[in-house]
Image (tube, rainbow, N blue to C red; front, side):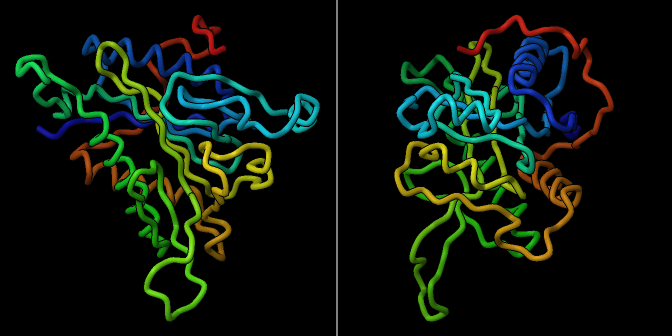
Length: 258
């Protein structure tokens, strides 16, 4: 029987509320009460700093952050600082890795070890293939997370002169083996907001978007449709869109992001 994954699209959602939803879903999925769930949404202007991040990688002062109405959150995902905002498609796959076959043999030969790296690589494959539906050539890069677009300064060059980043990825695994956080694909965000940070903590990292590469810009619904096709293909899922989450989504957060 094909595995089922629920898909819920929420529109623009404050980061703190999305965090609460992820925690609540992860608890229920860990108990086996729910199938895997993919949240698709956008955030208001937000900077998040991961476990490997530094506040020094936020370049704008508090006054500038306030003027641009940017919220700043320290979060427990991997990676450094990134930006979320309108025009960016954020995906939070809340997946139980062991049930999906991401368990290998631990160092002691007995305790299973969940293969988070393989999971992240599959997310990269999905995003690369999704962009490929629209003629965008993208790739992963050795030693770097996320999805990148090669830039050639001449048609005669076989190797790119540089790379621009179009999607960021950062995940966390709960104690019960369920993934939190996920990916952010730049469709048509306000690119000037990247000027306030050192993206991913990489000096000289240049961000790009689908809108900068393609003219005309594909409809967001078509991008999401391609994304869901690739989730089905890579994870062998049946993606089922749901109209409501199975809990009170208006509840205030019990979880604190410092």
